Length: 241
Image (cartoon, rainbow, N blue to C red; front, side, top):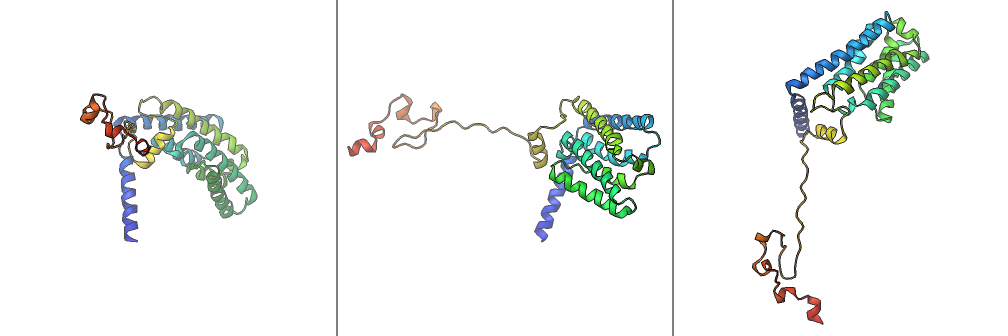
């Protein structure tokens, strides 16, 4: 048990350490992306959906901004997870509220738990989706009155703004890529640098000799001039014949 706890502690410490290995330039672009994404959504809320509950903007999209701008290589931050995670969670959240509109505890529990399972089944896990599902039950009367319109606006419209902003801002620096490639995500998860494996030179064996590399300087004296000793060149089958 102690060994397991120590190993867990070492892994957690390593993960935290890896997360702090960022260049100063990364902090700048993280700020720019998060600021623009949330600012554009806020302007949209103010212009098109007046008097909407502001907790929705801070809780759900704020958490998504942390992933798509602060952890661009994370599998949880990829476009598929961002879009599908919010969509499924919003849909389940509204459905749960309609099934139990007077029982807040029941609709909230159903919304969050079912949305997590749905994201697991579809392999689109996106933690902020849980907040999106919960807000459908605990949001203001204005949010609840939207019904299934809540899925399209403000949820999917806000997701679209975050996605477009992430695609633009995260691809401006040379060392940042969004969406991240599969090998880049694998490298981040393992915490190891990606190094190509060099192909080893082919080796051949001759009867009566050890493994002979192709480098001329390492060839035996009897093979350097292109001659093979008669005893080594003979095949056992020829001797038997």
